Length: 155
Image (cartoon, rainbow, N blue to C red; front, side, top):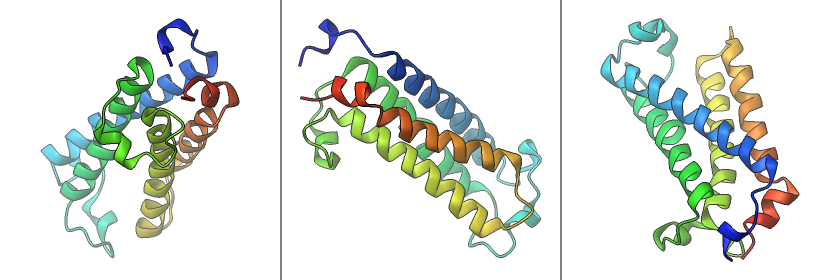
């Protein structure tokens, strides 16, 4: 499909903004946690990690940087420019749609899993940010599944 010839549906712009916002937060938080694994830069106490498999915030920071920072950036790029790359097609569960659409769905699911695992490992009290990111994950999934967005990425 010649994506450039078809106007982008409005919900797609919202999806791209959601992905870029997630990207900014993931890169910012992931960088701060990998740069200072004590969590001090984000005012996160080491005591929050008690009972988790982590002794500091380095591994969570790397995971945050990759999956909630760089991954949504790659997806936003793919949604905007629709490059025909072979390597992401190997992971595309929906070959009838462009890989970036499928990866956008993966991103929303990944964020939902991230927040749920975080809440499971850290336990109460829960942060208002966890509720915000749960809603963010839902919004990414909803706007990815928006019928006009789905049709736009059909092959």
